[in-house]
Image 1: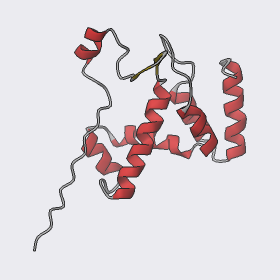
Image 2: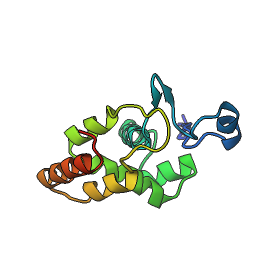
Image 3: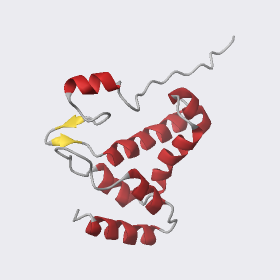
Image 4: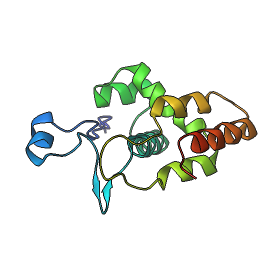
Length: 137
């Protein structure tokens, strides 16, 4: 008996620009009451979904995720780096308030810089400083 090793997974990183323009939406941002979810919230949730796909065996590794999603391995690595953040910082990011318009003051690049700090106490210090600088708390 032969097993089928084929795995299919569908996810959308960016919606078609035409559809977002027709709605007048910010591309890629899901609608929620009171505005749009911050991009960093979306990307962290995607990293968690990718981790779960690997855990379940839907993807073997990050290279497999890149092939499945049509992304570069480097981009997958950037996304997955957000999982290095301390768990409570991840929760803060997942529960950031929606923004009515424009960009949210916390960027993915800034969060990846914090994730590069391997000590969770150092990450907390950087996170607190970032929130104070951006007037988030």
